[in-house]
Every structure is written in C-alpha cells, then in structure tokens.
Length: 340
Image (cartoon, rainbow, N blue to C red):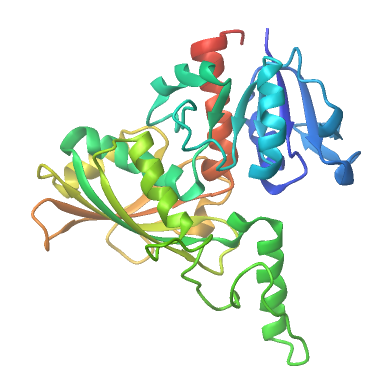
C-alpha cells in the first residue's frame, strides 16, 4: 500500500525535478496528481515512464491525499497550503513562507529527522533554502564530534536558483557576448550575469546583509544548533546548475583534518572527493543530476585554534530543493504515516 501524492507547481524546474526524483527513488505511490496554475493547465509532465496532465490547483480537492509537495513560491503557498493542510494532506513546502514559523518543522533528513514529528501542529513541513540544505549536511556530523562555534561561508550560487528566467538570462547574455549587434540587458538579475559575478541575492536588509545571507544564519540555527554563530556572503555566478560553498569552521574542540575526512566519508548524503592533486575535487558540473553533497579541499585553518576549511558542492535543484522535499516525504511515510 502506497501514498496518494500531489506535486504542486509541477511545470516549474523544481516541480518537474520532484516528479523525476519520486520516480527514480521508487517512492511508494498509489495515486499521483500534478497541479499547476490555470495558465499551465493541461501541460504534460513526466513521471517515470508515465505522462501526467496537469490539473487546476485552484479547484483541486486535497481530501483523501496523503501529502503534497509544494513548489510554487511564497505568495501562492500562502493561499493554497492551508487549504491542503486543512483537508488532511500534509504539506511539504519548498518556499520560504513557513521556514521560520516555530510551529512548522524545518527539516534536512540527514541532520534533524526527529523534527518530523512536529508536523502535526499545522500539518506543514518546511524545506530549507538551497544554500543552507547542502551546508548543514556537512556541518552536522562535524558538530556532533567537536561542537561548532562559528562558521564563515561564501556561496557561489547558480542561476537556476532564480528559476527558469535566471537560466534563460544567462543563456541569452552569453550568446550576446559573441554577437556585437545583440544586447540583453539585465532583467532577472541586478547586473549582467554572463561572464560576471553578482554579490547580491534577494533583498538588502538594514544591517547590510541580504535576505539570502540572513536565511542561512536563521536556518542553520533552527536545523542544527541555535548556539552556532554564522556569517555568510552569497554570490550569484554564471553557472546553470549547482551551488558551491567555501566554508570556514571554528570548533570548540580540536578536530584533525584526517578525522574530519573520515567522519564525512561515513556520513549520510555526503560524497568526499578530496585528493591534493590537479582535478582532485568536485565542481558544479560534476554534481549535476547527483543525489550527494560533495565535499572537497578539507584542510586545517592555522589562523585559528580549532579551525577547518572545506569546499561543498551540490545540485541545488536536487538536494537544495526537490530531493530534500522527497526525502522529507520518505521520512514522513517511514516515521509517521507508515503506509508504504
């Protein structure tokens, strides 16, 4: 016996990836529905070897459905998630709307699976920000061993984090660089993204940080440990898929780089590729389409007493969004609903 599953926002990048991953991981599905807005009504999407026709989100009845994976942004989620939750369908939401709600668990299954039992307060579970999700997978096993005091992280985030419009803008601007008569001014991003980097993701806040940077701080505290101090600089780079992060960690206790490497190799969801030779590390190109979070360049930081540096790369459409949502669904089914 399987689950009745709804994918909301099935025609978007993340929604399509959710359907792909549900099929790839052979999630126990009895019935599945693909929902979209009316402008995308009737669009066909793939689910394994099946083709689904999208249904109208506005008129859909969530009664009798076990769980709904939402990938439609905060505004639409605010309208439709409570409707699904009230009908008894557990919402797994990919937007930022519920992440900081104390009555909604924010979950990365490799890190805080026990939090899933808090779903019942609102019948909603939140999926973290893409840059946070991959980072905390790496931080948690190291924190368990040596207690993290402070993290300094710089992110190099792909344009797919800004949706299809971001990917299209990079593609169009890249072509325009080689065509002197073409000009593609920035629309999705604040400045030209092709052959450039932009130290600005989301809106600016009063203290000079951006909201993306604030999200990493707040979410790490909620998922891993509120005592961790974290500062972030988030940068958009001309990469289509795959977020990268340079992470500096200060621990309460000394942690040798070799022990850290061994810990990470044994930790769920992590692939260590760390050879001190040309090409002995992971880059975004290699991580696309993979489930793992890749860790490379593990080394001591000699400028502080108990410090390590590492490089973290992951497919942001997978671990940063769709994969984590499906993993939450698996966790919910295994630990709570217990039908599959």
